[in-house]
Structures are given as C-alpha cells and as structure tokens.
Length: 275
Image (cartoon, rainbow, N blue to C red; front, side, top):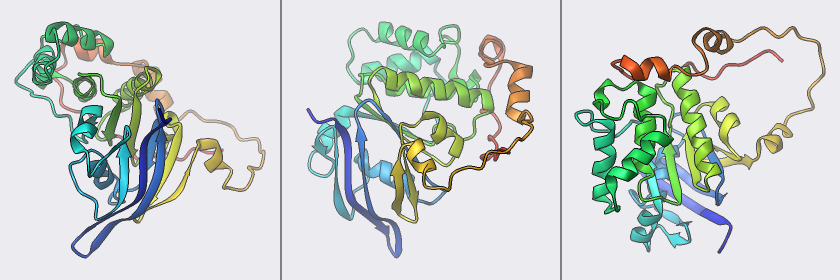
C-alpha cells in the first residue's frame, strides 16, 4: 500500500468570477499531521470540502486513501471524518448521549462501550452525563473530535480546530491532535495560526491566493530565510507564560466540575516574540 494518504494535483475551483483555488498540489503521508496554513479567504475550507466530497472541483484530481474523490465518493467517505470550524454537538443531549447517537448511526457494535471509551480517552468521563450545553468551548471541541473518531476513520480533516478557544482549550486540542497521529490517524488540519502549525505539523503547506506557495517541514521552511544572527537578548515571559503559570497547564478540573460553559473568548492572533 502506498505511503500517501492524500494526493492533490491541479485542483481548481471558482465561484462565478472569484477564483478560489488556482491549481493546488500536495501529498500527505499516512499517519502524519499536515497543516494547510493560510489567511482567511485563502481557500482552505473550500479545499477541505472538495477532499471530503462535499464540493466538486472545476479541474484537477485528488485521491484520499487511494480513492478518487470525484469517481468514488462513497469509498472516500468511509475512510474519513470531518470536523468543521464549529463544534457540531447536540447541546440538548449529554456528552455520552451524543457519542451513543453517532455510534448507532454508524452501526457500530456496542455503542455504549464505544462512548465510554471515547469519554475516557478525551478526559470527559466526569462530564459525560452532563448536557453538552454546559461544556466549555474546549470540552465541546474535544467531544466533537471524539464523535468524529467513531468508526475509526483512517483520515480526519480538522478545519480551523481551535477557532474561538481560550489558551488552555487550544493546548488541550493540540494534545488531542498529537495523540491522533501517534495512534496512526492521518490528520489534515487547516489553520490561520502560525504557532498552531509550528506546534503540530510534520509538514506545512502555505496556501496563498489559491495556490501552494511553499510546502515543507518547519526546518525546511526556516531555511528559506537568511541565517539568524546570534545576539544576547533578555528573554521576557510571554503573556501565555504568565497566564498558564497562574491558572495551571489545564483548567479542566475546574471547568468539568461545574462550569456552565460558553466557548472561550477568541484567542489572540499569532504573537511575535523577540529573538
């Protein structure tokens, strides 16, 4: 079997006179985390919709798990799971009920056992019988990803997985994504956050004005710039360092015990630290 989980060649897509994708090419290795980095409107979500068979390309070809997205959409859907920009959980149901419902829809054997295993895996056991409406933003996103894993898809698409999450919730989602890859799942995530791509991705493709302008590992991309000059700079703690020192690495113990959550405030844009 090929080591390539996703192959994209010459994908183009326009909406009337707006050319969103202008010939996109890249490959994603099995079991890796591939970040599609770009600003708002760069075409990231459009490309994910094409790869997940929700939208047809105007030109080009793409295969997912060896299946052509245009000619064999059913086989592609059996191999993937998609988590959109906003958590798609039923807030009337509890976390466990959400998982059991999806397991039944996917005809998984013993849906209750599957739900319990995923609640434990995503540190949601204590909150499992609470309504999802009471979850914090990070907990909802973790539940959303857990629901996406039912049926054990080989590939998961994460479209802007940390949009609107607070710093603690972002770190929790990052940890979850890393665990997915360690377990052999191929992850393609879209993001506009530079630090997110830097923290997670094995390879990073920069999508700009509908084309991939660079594609490589973090080390390869850094080599595109002139060598850094060595200077002595007094390193000051960042706001994130201060925040995490005050509240701890994770705030789940507090949030899961009684918080009635709304998603956290939108996280700040990428910080530039002095070097």
